[in-house]
Length: 556
Image 1 (cartoon, helix red, strand yellow):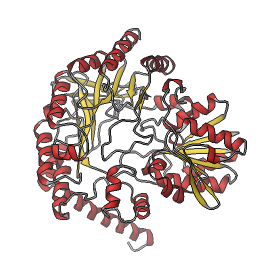
Image 2 (spheres, helix red, strand yellow):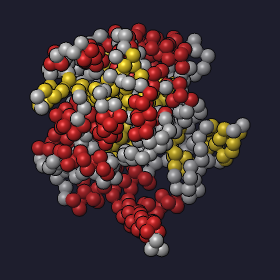
Image 3 (cartoon, one colour):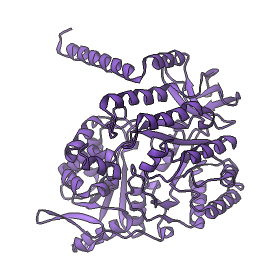
Image 4 (cartoon, one colour):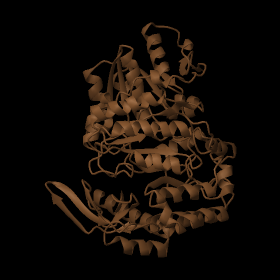
């Protein structure tokens, strides 16, 4: 049995789907779901190949066709989150055309959120709902023996023209028993060799070699905007298992950044402190500096935790902020408060660290007054926000309670139409849906205020110098927080009105590296506001497109 796993080509920046794109892409957060499944299947004796489309140049259709022409695969696995619906839809079509005998299996958040709808739209042979390792193995064994798929928990398939969903799969409790994800199979060395300090989580070093590590699975909380692909049963790996993987990653890949993809670090304080102790014991033996990035809730940290994190080289801490209004936080079921948010940001700043997170507007409980509470805090506390906090609007992702609310209230009138529209237009982050009780005109004013603040608030700095030294670009820039000069390598000078979010190498504050054009643009943006600037841009784009089309047909 030969198995192919396809990792989708991830989007750069805000998601838009372009089936004709031919570019390689190394600017992505490494997915762990499919590599974990690959490792588990390999451990159980199966022949698995991973096709990582991000590392290949050419149209996706041609790349898949080329791989299928070289090898005959019995089973093809793929999947992802909901925004990659158009990619997965096309992958199914390409596989059907070029390898009609292959069984197609799709999993991930896109399936777990809407199994019936996505099965009908994507039309694979099987879908995997929830956690995938045991399900993938049992499904493989079932197909191999021509067995009864109804005996495999956590899948969907067609029988007599009808979709059959088997009983849900119980969560894997012993996470230590799972093998490390098959990053080697997806070309991890190539990824590391091409990773630049352009992600805010990677800008601590000039030549980042980040390693993604899953220390736990799921989350026991139920925030309304969030969807847990594998349910709400929170499970943690043992500290020994995590430390062993860190040692493995450092020795095998020479990584210098460990990115803990753990939503609730410090949920268990004693465990977090013991983890930091054991990490430090190991990293002190490594001949180079290793940095850590991780996330925690604002109600699960104190000075002792932050001191421990700083001692192991943690410079950036992801935070679940969402709003500075208690009304909105309660509506989101965050179980946190504005006072906790301010306190954790203040402590992080005092420790010379930086927080990362977002304030997201537009919850159903949002009003102009609640939004003003958040905007006022954001505008007046840049000294403790330290550049790592972004502004945006809440998105009703499929499967979340917020999405279900939109369906129940008729905000989303037709789910299939909604999915198809997003597949054609991408995720319109600058055209958010009005989920509030505000009128559309009031909501437009709020959108203007939020995005204007996003573009015009925060610290920035113009580089002192930029030159190539031994073929590597080198930039000197003064930090607007501590006034110290940092020398940044392997990063390009921004173009005209563009900017690059970077971190100070002395105080860890985040700020925008900009060109001399930027202050004027920012001033104009502040005067005109986002909505007028956006309207002008749309007008210019229409004129440009008309002119382009006229030239194509010979009118001009």
